View 1 (cartoon, helix red, strand yellow):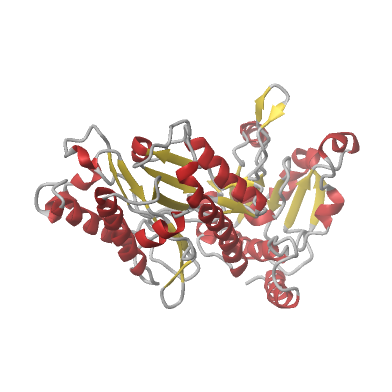
View 2: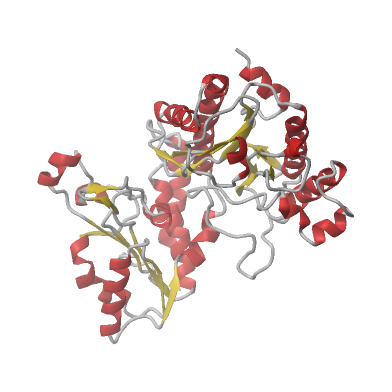
Length: 459
């Protein structure tokens, strides 16, 4: 490991013990971003690579109105800088000289603009960040970057989904005779770093989950007295806001009756009918880290017989999937277990006909359970990474990984089954941390058994 980066990491460990890790506002400790960069720069050095990462652009919603700004996840992961119009340039050096390895380009403050927006961070604030070697105005990037990246074989780049910057950078490099011969997407490397969460990241996700869970528990007893899906959504998201979450992790999904059978239903206009189920798939975001929780409850507060049977089948599949989680297990194992239990149960109920093993082989279960059981969770609700590793082999679970477990059964009124099962849509989703000895259910405090839900919903 490079000496400079070894010192960054040691300073981070000592500093996190001295300053309690998190600031009063709950922000990630700024030293953490220096630690991440140090590790990533050592990987770049081994590849004879430099890296350019661009912030997310601002997007106009309609005339003179922008969408709410949210920083690009890879950019925030390595920079800790939350504002637009910024570029992070990483240029590993081969020796222990004081030559710059971390350069951050940001916009200077604009007092006229801040009359409208309030104070923004600028060059002076960027200089306070640990582990940044030099700071420049973002307008100077194209004047300076060519000299900084000269001599590297590979360029690792993230455009931050900014098409204008991508076009300008590509045009600039085409005009230059000296630039890296290999261009690689930064996400192809960063996603493996993001898979293992630090203690500070785990705390941020736990906070997002706590906000989500408390908001759901507050809303459950109100549901029998509400009339429309949008009222349920409003009450849940009000709970997020009053508990300090400034953003959603993703667009809330709230579907009642037949709308609960649509996986990512987002209309919110359906009427809530007594006797139906309502499915809520929601998550607050805290310091860029998302929760992802699904709960399905009876609108009148009590499951009927068919609803209870399907709900318990999904819960049994989820519980078994969660209990399979431990280091050394393949990422897909919770899904495989959930599929086995759901398929066997659907056969016993007469909703599927045939040998369960053959039905699984033929994926016949997908008629009622058509999605995967798990995805990674972190800066993005469907976080960086896939079910396979860099070699294309199944990902093996390691301590520090966080994944969801969310089996479901969805029976629409178009299915050729007894109508008593129609419009039952059930998904139960929880967030699970892989630990050294097994797992920790981060969302354990959110009711999920039939008895717990019915008890909470009583007036």
